Length: 295
Length: 338
Image (cartoon, rainbow over all chains, first blue to last red; front, side, top):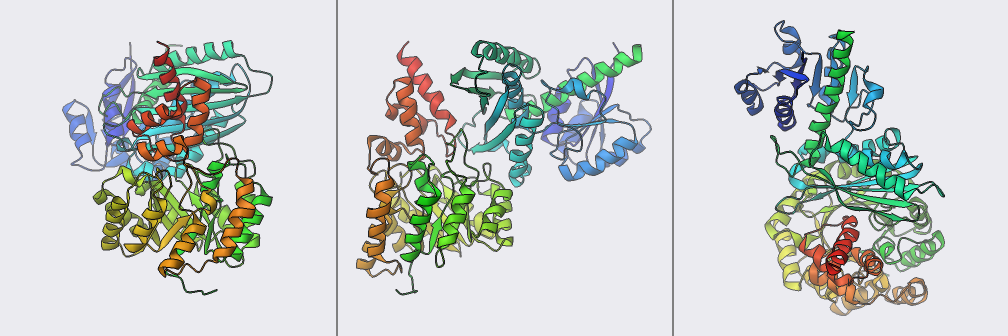
C-alpha cells in the first residue's frame, strides 16, 4: 500500500514524539524533521532514525527539491505558525497545526474530522479539548447540552513554558471549542497544575447540563462507552476513571489519560493525546488523499 | 481616625467568605458589608467568587449573583477603601481582570499554587498596565519547602508584584513555620510581604502575630471569620489585639464589632466554628474550600467526610481540584461495601 509523505516542523518534545508515532503508521511516511537549531537533540535523533534532519527551518525544507511532503505537522509556536501557514499554503501542503494559533478550524480527532478532510489547515485545539470534547459530544448526540464545563488537571512537569506563559489561551480556546466542536450551547474550561511527585496522570472532569426533560441516562451511558472506545483506538491510555455520575439534568464524566510513553513520559498524557490526535487526523487525511488517487 | 498604619489589612469576607455561603452573596449584602468596612476605614476589601474571577462553575459552585455586579456594588459605597479582586490563572483570564478594573477595582491579587508562580506574569503585568496594585498570592504554602517558597516569591517580584503573600490555604502551618517562612522572605525579597491565614487549627491569630513580628505588613482577615473552612484571622479581633500591642491598623474597632454582630452574623448559614471538618482540613493540609463540598459528598455516598479529607491530603491534591472530592468519596464508599 502506498503511503502519504509527511514532515514534522519543530524538533522539540512534541516533534520528537510525533516522529516516533509516525514511524509506526501504515498510512504515513515521515520524510523530514525540520528545526532551526543545528545542535538540537531532536534533529540528531531524526537523522539517527534515518529521516532527513533539516536545520534551516521551513524555508530550507521547501527550497530542497529532494524533500517532499503532502502534510506537515506544525509543532512550533503560535507566532511561528502564522508564517508557516502562509508558506505551506502557497506550496499546496496540508497543515496540522498543533500550536494555539488556530488559523484553520478546530478539529477534535474523534468528533469532526470528516467535515474537514478537504481543509488545507486545521487546528488541534488544546490537550484538554482533545480529551474532553469527545465526551461533551457523546452526551450531546443523545440529549441537547445547555452547558458543558471541563476541568483539566495536569502534572506541573508536563506543562511547558509555552503553556504557562499563555494559560489564558487554554481556557479561552477550550471553552470556545466545547461550543463549536462539542456542540454545547455554552462552554467553560478550567486548568489546574498539580506538582505532586511522582507526577500525576492527566485527569479531566467533564460536567454537562442537558436540556430540561431530555435526560436519557441509558442512551448517554451507551454513547459515552462508545466514544471511549473511539478515542482509545488512537490513545490507548484514555479511560474513564469511574462510572459517570447522573444527578438531575447533570452528567459528570471522569477521564484519565495515560501517555503511550513514546518519547514523552507516561504522565504527559496531555501531550500524548495531542500527538496521537495529530497522527490520527493525518491518517484520515491520507486515506482521503489515497482514495482520490485510486479513483 | 489616624491614616498612619503599621499594617494594611485586606478584608476577605466578600471573597473567601463566598465559600462559606456557597457563593450566594447578594448585591444588597455586599452593599451593606462594603459600606460598613469603608466606614470602619479598612484599607482593602476583596470581592470576587471564592475561587476568584470567573470562579462561578459547577466545579466550585455557581454564583447567585454575577461577581461583576458585586464588585460594582462594593465600589459604589467605598470612597476610602480600595476594592481588590482575586484571580487564579487557569480559571480567570485577562478579560475578567479588565472588566473588574473598568468597574473600579484597584488591586489585583494573582493567586497560584505555591510552586507555580510562573503562570502569573501575564496577569501581573496586565494588572499593572491597568493601573492596579498587584499581589502575588502563593497558595497552599505549606506544600513547598522554604527555599522553594523563596524562589517562587522572587519570581512574583520579578513579574512586578508589589507584594507577595504566604497563603496558608489549608490552615495547616504552625507558628514556627510561619516565622521561618516570613523571615526567609524578608531576607530575600524587597517587596511587601503579606500573610493570609485560616483558622482550622485555631492558629490564625497566633500565626498572624508571628508574621507581623517577622515583618509582614499586609494582613488578611475575615470579619466574624467569614471565610472558607473555619474562616480566616478574625478581623475585628485582630484590630483589638493590634491596638493592645501598639500596632496601628487604622481600623475602627467599634465599627468592626458592630459590622460583625449586626450585619455578618445574621447572614451566616451557621456560625463559623472549628467543626470536625474544618479541623480535619488543618490537620490533613487540605484546601479550606473543600470542607462544604466534602460534607455534601459524604452525605451522598454515606461515608465520613473526615475520611475523604484525609485521603485528599494523602494524595497531595491542590487548590481547585474539587472534582477529586466526589471521586474519592465514591472510592471510599465502594471499598467499604466490598
